[in-house]
Image (cartoon, rainbow, N blue to C red):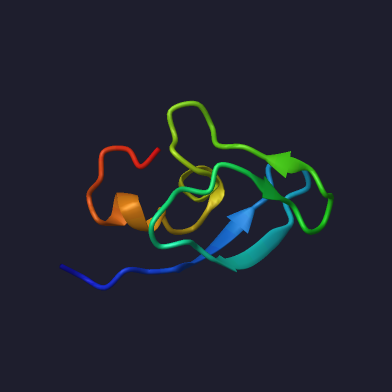
Amino acid sequence: MSELKLESTLCCPYCAGEAKEIMPENFCQWFYECRFCRELIKPKPGDCCVYCSYGTVSCPPVQMGSACCG
């Protein structure tokens, strides 16, 4: 199994601000407050977390092959 990537860059769907973040290893992050515009970001329908919807790298549970980590 390849090593988990824990750093992902989130791109805000409201203001297009980009922030590098460290993802939690054992759960999905369902909400994220944009550090630029302060909007509360939620996953797109069908995605398990904000990293899978708006990040450059999928969340660790998905990287490990989990169908859903919610």
